[in-house]
Each structure stands twice: as structure tokens, then as C-alpha cells.
Length: 386
Ligand code: PMP
Image: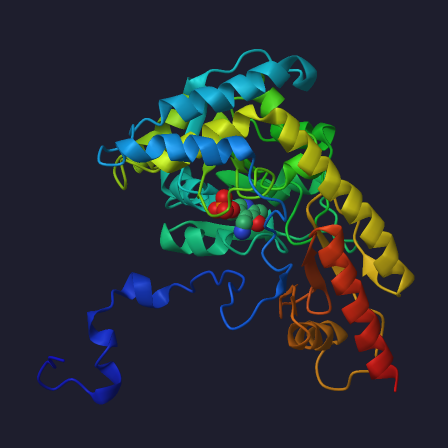
């Protein structure tokens, strides 16, 4: 390795790094372990495989891989617009076309592009307990953040998103249902926040909306200050494909496009486009699997409560659960249960952070996986009581 003259040993690696890169605190995604097979309930993936139509669509797209994909991702934007167009009467909206839709390489990318498109050099507000990727992209793109604390019961109160709490803010990010709590705001609450903030852009991150909350997509014609962000990683079984999208009025979409075209012209590859269209079109499989996950969630939530867990009311594909007191001396009960579960081959997520360091975030798996989780937890409780 080349070394600059006079550079200290400690600085050897860091002397090339920009102040910006050195100053950020990167997001740490949940583990994707390779050491053994786990019951994997730690990253909110869908336990069911993608629609069989997705497999066929991907096969059909392989021959054209020598060609660049459509930089506009038009066919997939049309499929998304069509899906929501069909639902608009039920959602109370008017019309939606591809001009209302932006597609990115996972919704993390969409959220990241939104920062420079609207908020660089400005201040945004979001909950103190929410998706931990937001501070990272805010930091990267020079966005200041003001926290709007959740209530003591971890709920979001729309009144907290008005008046002096939002003075000076250029925008708000609302995760609905919120992560990692799983708790949802009603559509009326979301509308209350939108109407109280007509001159602020409100980004509604609906990564988990399909598991039991009403989407705000129906409000895009009525409110020009809402941008709804969704993903195909959770309810459409395509975490490995990386497809996210934003829905809002065309001027907002155009602003995100300007940033995207200054960064990566081709956010979705040919396989992703084919897979995404097939997934949007197979509404039957989508409804069936979302329903199954919601049923499993509600059943196992009760089972865990029976074991002494306190669980927040979840509308998502995960539970945020406080374990029963086990009399653990070192650290929290949740940290202990997390570690013991891992030893038994069950992965869940634990955040050693203020307000939430005695809770586990448990992704809803298949019934079989949830049975393994339950049995492992029963063992851990019995072992702790000895
Ligand atoms: N929003 C929330 C609230 C999430 O939990 C996640 C998944 N970590 C995402 C967005 C991003 O998902 P993806 O990039 O896979 O679309």
C-alpha cells in the first residue's frame, strides 16, 4: 500500500476519506447470516415465495439482458398506476397514471432521492422512534432533523404534527404503519396531518401498509403535499429484487426524477421490471398471502401475550414485543431473549436504543416458523426460572 510522507499509522486508511463520509453514521441492516440455517424473523421479509408468474416473467426477460433497461421504467410505472387505478374508487381518489409514479431500486433508494429533491439545507420532522434509515439519509444529504416524540404508548398523535411543533419545518416523514412499533394511523389521521401542513411536503412511508392499514394513495389528487412511498420487498415477496416506488402529484415525481437522473439513470433492471409487473398484476396471490400473514400475526400475538409478553397493536408483518420479566441482571430481558433465541437458531431484531431497549421486533413467518419461535421462547422462560 502506498503511504504519503509524514502520515501517521492511524491515519493510513482515513487520509483519503471525505469529511462527509467520515461524519456519517451508516445504517446497519438486519443480519443476513451465512453461518447456519436460522428461522429468520429479523428483517421483515415475506415468508412466502413470489407469485409463480414472477418466475415466468423473469425467465422471459433474460434474453434481453444485453440491452439496457428502460430508464423511465414506464411499463412498471403503468402496472403500478393500473393497480391503484382499479382501487381508486374504494380509496376515494380520482385518477392515477404513470406520471404519478416514480420507481427506484428499493424504497430505501426512493427515500434517499427524496432528501436532495426536497429537503437539502432544510429541516424535516419525524418521530423519535421510527425507521432508523431516515437519520442516515438526512445526514448524507445535509437535511436537519427535529424529532416529534411518540406518545408514551408509542402512538403518533396527529395533533403533534401541527402548530409550534412543525414551525420552521420544510417537511415531515410519517412511517405508517410505523417501524419498529407496527402501530398505524388511520387515514383520517393522515388526512388531518396533510391538511394541517399544506405548505410542507409530507412523505408517508407505507412499507408495511398492505398488512392491515389504509393507504394514502387515494389522497394524491386532493393533496399536492403528499408523497406516498411503498416497496415490493414486504407484501410482494421481492426483497431480493429491490423495487420501491413513490406515488404523488406529477410535479413531485418530476423533482425526484431530476435527482435520479443525476445519480443512476437505470434504477430498475430488466429482471426487476418484469418481476415487478408480474407481482403487481397477480392481485389474487397478493391478497391471499397478505391475509395469511395478518391471520398468523393476530394468532401468535395472542400466544405470546399468553406467555407474558406485552405487544403493541400491530398492523404490519412484525410484532414489537416486550418479554415478561425474567430477572436478568445484566442488560434487559429483551437483550437476553434475543441472544438465547439466536443460540437456538431463531433470529429476531433487537435495538439497543432509548425507549425500545426492552423490546424485540419479531417478523411474522409461516405458522411452522412461529411455532419454532414459540417453543424456543417457552424453553428460554423455563430455563431462566430455574
Ligand atoms: N421503509 C421502512 C419502514 C422499512 O422498514 C424498510 C425496510 N428496511 C424500507 C422502507 C426499505 O425497504 P426496501 O428498500 O427493501 O424497499
